[in-house]
Each structure stands twice: as C-alpha cells, then as structure tokens.
Length: 115
Image: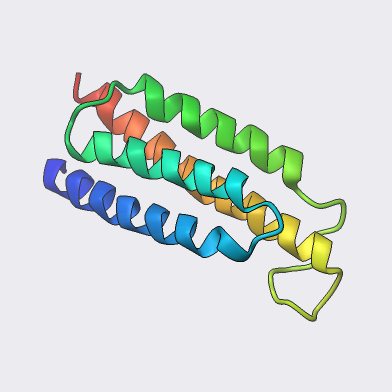
C-alpha cells in the first residue's frame, strides 16, 4: 500500500502541475493556478511523507465547499457548444475541485492510518 500511495501522490503532483499550467486561458487563471499549485504541493508532501493528515483533510474540505460554491444553477455537461458556456465552465470547475478533494481525502485517510 505504501508504494501505491507514493506512486499515486507523485502522479497527482504531475496532474496538478499540468492542470495549473492549462489554466492560463481561463477567465480567472490566477485563482485556479493557485488551487492546483496547492494541490501539487500537498501531494508532494504526501509523496515525501512530510505532511500530517490534517493538511490534505483541510484541502479536501475546502475543495468540497468550493465545488458547492461554483456548481452551476443548471448542469449542462462539460462539452463546449452543448449549452450555456458559463454553466459548462462552472461544472468543469466544480468537478475539478471534487476530483482534487477525493485525492486529498484519500491522502488524509492514508496519513491518519499510518500514524
């Protein structure tokens, strides 16, 4: 399990960095670059076994709260051209935060378990 978590954490570091870089053309890029950079840093700490379970737990909770905040009034999917662009963008942002939260909760569970 330990090697799986370490590999997953390193993969999530890479995915978070790629996600941060891809935000350059977002309407509010700085916010999302910071969010994904924090995700990368926490994952990096987990990969190196240097963070307590509290840090990923807090990030996971904040991610769920953020997803609830940005979730669109009407979910219209993820594909551009299939609905209102604002609803699609907010849906993508919300689900990105939920994916990040799931990873953070997993890291928190693992770190708490390994104490």
